[in-house]
Image 1: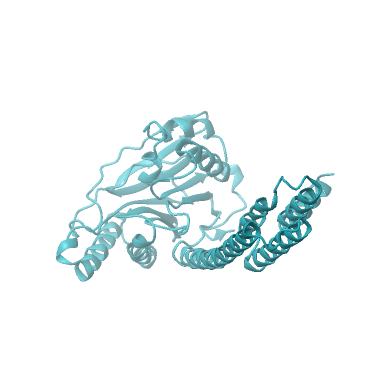
Image 2: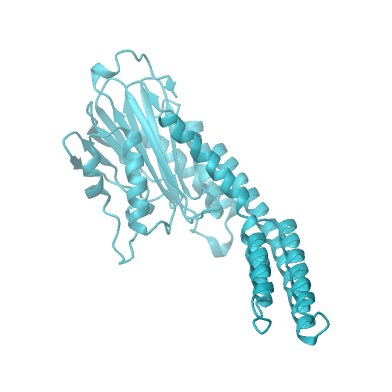
Length: 379
């Protein structure tokens, strides 16, 4: 029963898509037939312009030109049947309809080109997103991971928010960050930070030293590219988390980034104590404080960017992330991301004012991951 229902839906959609361009043609036929049957003092010929005007929203330039030509032919037929094909009134109507049809065809051509350009931009953006934002592994040892990215610019699908996960020997390191700006202009800094993290995270350096290495990379990049007017304008906030395999004590260091939320079974939400340092790229040699907290089996760590908590509704109220996620503390990371996506977009009315990213890391209870050995990613 279910498979049959899913089969009918796509076929019906395809048939409807092909049938829509027939609507203007049917409209021309109806207007022509009615005009030929009503008294001669009633003129429905001018209503023929509706058909070609409607066509560009349903079909391409060729169909628009065909419908326009058909409307002109119908106008000629109406004038001939009423015996006024040579009158000034019918000639003006024909010329007006012909000019309108030409304009509509030109508009349709421009519209199709715009659609093709937009499709190309989206394709490039998707390729850039896959190159920069590698899909996160669904599971690494006892950790189950899910992520969500919502770009402020629909055409871009990627912006200044970023995240990455790197497994190592006995621990996995997670990065979530937010570079200054949003959309396409912020991709350069995001790529730099992601590249620096992936290059350094696997090394056996303490988490604070890793933050310092990223800080120096951003500072060096800014020094090379900044103009005098842009001095001090290139920076990024970041949160680094190190989750060990056999120990619940988790380490984290914040570079001007919001603290994560710790979700525990039973609808408990807490905020681990955090001592943030300045954002990356501000000083370059800042000492970064490393904080510790317990990520117990069954808990979920939710990392996010400020685009989430600063999202406003129509009345200017911020999105209450901690209050909302309390409903879903017992859900899987995938279900949590699904709920947050729907709830966040509903809060802002369907469109975000800034890029937003979230990463959920769930430590499975011991009896749920006995079959996993080591930190090899699973997809």
